[in-house]
Image (cartoon, rainbow, N blue to C red; front, top):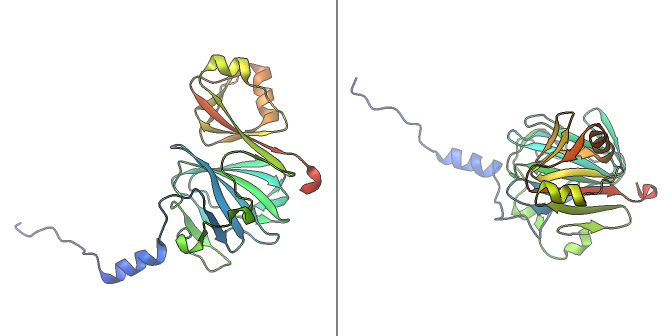
Length: 245
């Protein structure tokens, strides 16, 4: 047959539909706070493997029922009480949400929540339902972002320690340095920003982007040897004052 392959061309309506979903985005999210109908969030660390955000969700409010089709999401609650789907969370609790799993977090108190995304891609967002009218809309655009007077939101980049929680980073270039220097805090939650944590003897690996409780890491160390096999960067998160939960 001599007929050409048919083509569906881009239409004006297509362009308008794209604009309605993919709002104008910024080149990067550092030094910006994203204002949400439920509170706000900002990115306080990123590399080629992860992006880490602090979310403040006001009491009685919740995120949309949404999923990330291509990335794993790890959550660590640092203050307050919350529900994620049917799971009740208290300060110090954590979750790992597989790519494609729909989830929503509701704040039973004013809460602070750390979210680790791997790989970093803020536009990987599908909203199934949202009480604020954002259903089927993409991630917030530049018009919802603040870049001045960020101290009003408690903005920081890197680690922090306040009267509620502490966040710090620990880098280990090789397994010998890790073995000689790593001090495990059973009351902390650890996340892997690069590399992996290995629990020899029980064949458990915590890969990049995932988190684990210090108490469980203590168990891995007791049943074998907790270690690394290449350069590894950890984030350590700890609730400091239960009275502020």
